[in-house]
Length: 126
Image 1 (spheres, helix red, strand yellow):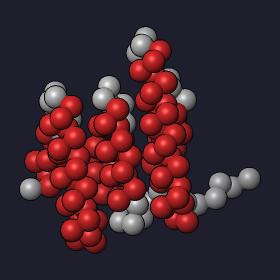
Image 2 (image 1 turned 90 degrees about the vertical axis):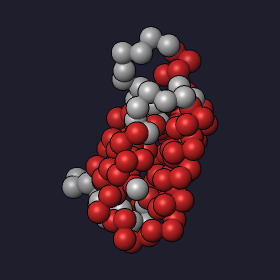
Image 3 (image 1 turned 30 degrees about the horizontal axis):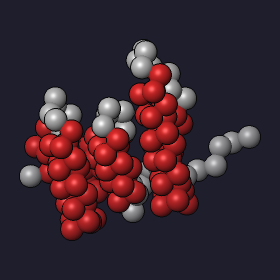
Image 4 (image 1 turned 180 degrees about the vertical axis):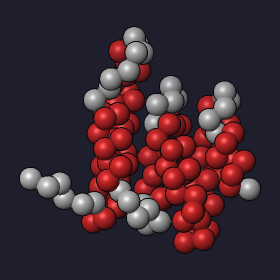
């Protein structure tokens, strides 16, 4: 059931459908726990993509879902790098308000990931 949900959330669906799918994926993460560890990369990709959705509620659900994913995630560094890059807002989208909203959501997601999974991050060599 997890695989099909992960695949269809990226389709062109109305925001209310995406919200329902993201909530369901969050429930699956909560109930399934460690048994879903093999799906962490797919969950992560899905939730990060949802951060760029035009709907604020979709972005908020994605942030919450990333927080639920952190206990299962073993490698946080790639996610942190991806969120930092996303927070810089480098996209071809000319809608300035949309870019700022996505940047804000990405920064909120970064804060959640650091709060819930920051201990798993490796310090950079310097």
